[in-house]
Image 1 (tube, rainbow, N blue to C red):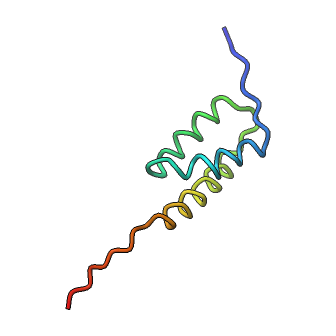
Image 2: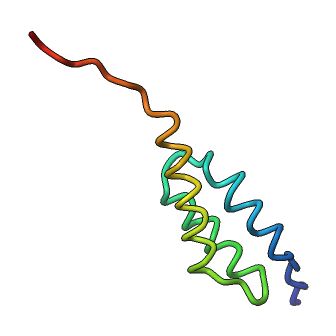
Image 3: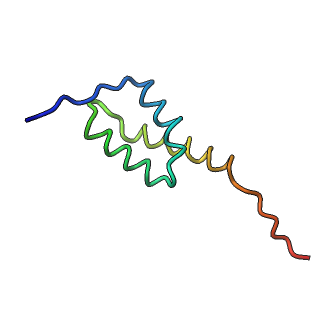
Length: 73
């Protein structure tokens, strides 16, 4: 028994990449999300999604980096 694949619009996939993926623990989570979307969505651009999601993840990561004052006199 087959099931219908989900139909995401480009702006919905961009929302997932830019707003949800930055909150995964590590970028390997983005690949897991992309793999799931690949199996469930027709016309899914894996490379574009991973690039957008990684860029958003890295920007979020950089914003949340803690400044470490480890200077020793």
